[in-house]
Every structure is written in structure tokens, then in C-alpha cells.
Amino acid sequence: MATHPEEKIDEMLKTRRIQAANPDLAQRIILKAQMTPQAQVFSLGRWIKQTFAELHLPNPAYVLAGTLMMGFVLGLNVPLDTAPENADAVQVLSFLDPDEGLL
Image (cartoon, one colour):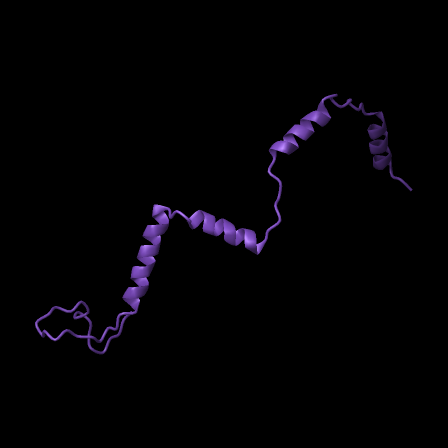
């Protein structure tokens, strides 16, 4: 059984005025849909191809970032206990105690 507020809402919905659609609405929807980029299916092959296409001619930022990363990795691979034969040479890690390791 419907309550009084529900009946009032139903009556208001029945009496409301419905505005007619614009005659060129369908054409506007079609034109707008043609301009909107469509979702493409993601595939591993397309992703790899797109990645290599972007990296084919390296961007200077990629070259700089790659050089810095390679320098960092190579710097971490250098052994710390290699001392030069020259005893008077200044060592970079000489400020550390012999008991201390790297932080």
C-alpha cells in the first residue's frame, strides 16, 4: 500500500512537462563520439612495440637518467677494501673508523 508522500511524488511525475529532443541531437552525438578516442585492447606485443618506438631515438632525459643509473650501479660494484700502493694517497673513506662500515 502506497503512503501519502509516495502518491504525491507519483502525481507530480505524471503531471510534469516533458521537453522534446532537439532534432539534430543524433547528429551531435555521432560527431562527438567520432572525436572521442576509443578504448583500445591492451596486448603485450603492442606495449613492447610502443616502448621500442619511444626509445628508438633516445630522448636526452633518457640518456642522462640511464647514464646516472649506470654510474650508480658501477659505483656500488667497486670493492671498498682496495687500497692503492701509494701509502700517501688520500682515501675517500678515511674519515670512518676501521670498525665502522658503510651506513
